[in-house]
Length: 153
Image (cartoon, rainbow, N blue to C red):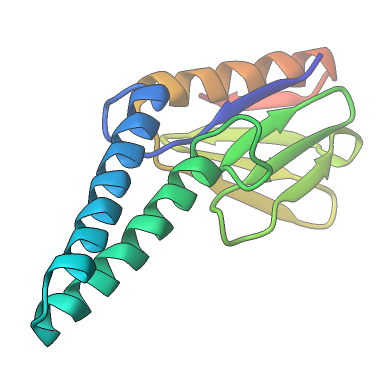
């Protein structure tokens, strides 16, 4: 059994709508940039068009990478029988923690601390209340299956 929960951003909208809004604004930015490049002869508007085109393309890539379940770069927490996989941001690599190494789990407001014999890993996240509850419920469920003590929550 594998559960994956995307972190998204803390804006109160469902993840699908957040992705659509990011895509829409990025496409509008890209089209405005192209329009400025094609129609304007003034150097200022030409430079602004190039900047808008670049930020629009970046926005489209970000919307696809950050808010898609299929993306390996999307910030998420994935739980399966063998390990916990946490990716906090697009730019940082993900962290894998084996369930066998975890002694206990401490939950607090928007953070989860995994205690292992030689170290601790604190997973702090910014998410809306629904996403936070889903994360904590999924971690608690998998920890109970593995007989790992869960504190707080």
